[in-house]
Length: 461
Image (cartoon, rainbow, N blue to C red; front, top):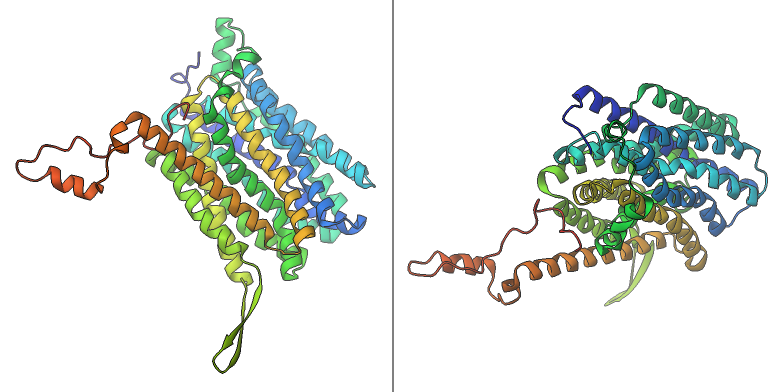
């Protein structure tokens, strides 16, 4: 029932940028524990495992809510649902200032996490304003609201050092509440909802919204997002603590360097959306996973001292990643993860146009759960192994698994579409050369371009 032809460019841009600013505010609140959690950790004397649970708790509630908020956005309209998400998130952040014990902080953190559910609402809302060939770019711009993490890392340390973490929480809560009011007053209902109301058509029931979840493809996309988004959230939360512990930095310096990861992992999502529209989401995912495997492998290498028995005696040398190489590597990692985040969500409105809220909500939920599980795992691995780089070891295993599954699924799809691929033993160059020889039959086994947009996998793969 979606009618985009009657929507003006001005309406599209207003919906896109209001949603992006609102999502930025929500994400800044969602990541608040990455900074104030350091002071709370010292205040309560928490272990790394308990600290990991604290900073990850908002991610848990925000992630679990995404699937329901996405469906409600399809049914009730993203404008209303996103407004309520921001208001509840603001209330939860204000209540955080009354917590004094660890259980109370965990309970308050659950309510802070409501702000994180804004993503699936925004995806459902923004995608309805744009045609399919522009949705990748539009959703890439919206997803750049992840830069709210950098806003918190740059501003919150200064406020916390000057006035304490309680002031940070109060300011962030007021800012989100103001944004909720502005968004509701300035935005409009999406064209799909407006058309449905004019036609008197009831919203799609919840059971029908959930129907695509039986496809393995949805869960494969979810694993991709578990790394590119869940890994981003986990590192955004964990890096300040990592830099303070591994390099002995103060919290302000750690926040600035951590922002060098959060900024490219956010704003370059716009580039990822544009590339997915132009070059295909599959190619972007290959680049994302390939580069991430290399970066996480290098970052995972621990600070090591070697002693080699040489001809004339022992030869000792030290191998470690300094602050500058570390900053460069996390910048590169953040850049490619941002491309991957956009590429994953390019698929959803293309293959599931009537189920964007539900499918986007599930993929977003699984990705968000990565942001909950991974910080806890990082803390537990620190406590168990005593090795700071163990967090990157875990990320290396995760991205290598995602790359292997993606490549395997694509190869299976190619074999099912083009059975001759399995029988070909010659190199493509040899096949092409043979087909061009005079008198030679044209090779019927030449490799074919696969995929409707040479980027997105076929439904069900």
